[in-house]
Image 1 (spheres, helix red, strand yellow):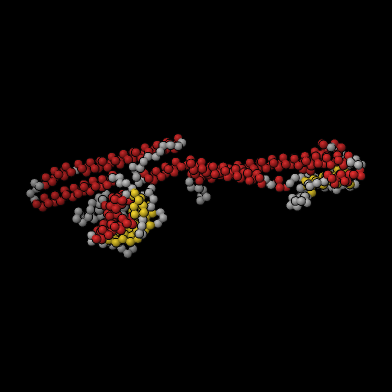
Image 2: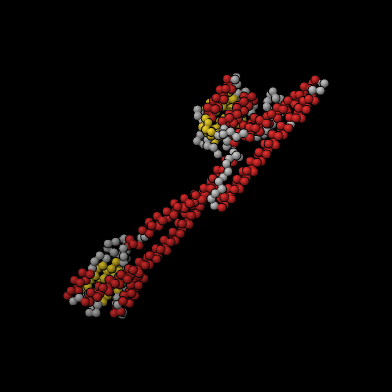
Length: 444
């Protein structure tokens, strides 16, 4: 399975290359077989023509000049000899190519029918590596003499289709390069859609996808844009509903406050006013949370190291036990105010419930990691996800003086996730809590 490419473009290219390679191999095999067959027929015809020309010249020359005529006819890849004896032993075995040459000779020179025509394959002295690449023919002449002819069956290098391999390879390379460009162009809308889906996870107000390209891509982009619009409407309706609900609760709270003034029992009077004040504070916190969630601050390049160092210095000057260490520079794209507010909530929580906060910044090639360490009692594993829920407080009995309303961690994680990151909690071996914030260096 590791050999199978992961992306659609890579798989398409792999299938295309496999099919193209198989097609070329089959084509080259068929072409090579046909080429060799044509070459054999051409060589057989050339050998017959050489023999007929040499025999005719020998027979027309005077007997005293026949040896000199044979020498004049000899040249590269052709050796003609005239003599009283045959060079080829009549007991030499036959060969399919020799049979074809014999048949063609008997067709062209009918006088040879019934004679002791002898053919055998021999080695080419110019090409020792090509065994049996010459033909020896011994044919009787009318006066009892013999014509001995040695003829090459062609250049052995011709049987190695180097030019064919080169031309086919160049053609395959050109087709392969063009296919890669076309496949990458065809799958580009899918990569755009993947990036848009990742961006939608952190920014529902991102611009819609361009609806262009093939019909299937246009339909997918249109469906994606419709989904994004519905999600945006749902989130907007939810925010407006909770904001309206929180706002409308102010009226009955005002009525309750007026009625509490008529309670004569001073102790009950104070308790009722305290409860009403706490409910108003919760409503104000809810409105602030919804207001921050709906706000769309412009993203820009920021130095998170400078932001955290300044924030820690400010809190330390205010008398809180806060320290900062780590990388001197950490650049990323994000919303400066939202990130500053989120990290301030996390650091203040560490100081409030863990006595101190040590902020450690680490930067690698892919992400920025911020660890906030404290010396508190930590958080049980069963509670680590619950503490991020709105209005959830581990200390059920704490009042507004001892703690907030359970929105700090909720707002912080919402901000970090909106930037493509996340928050995790873990207990430190030496005691205390380690809160880890990871943020991608590039925007989603």
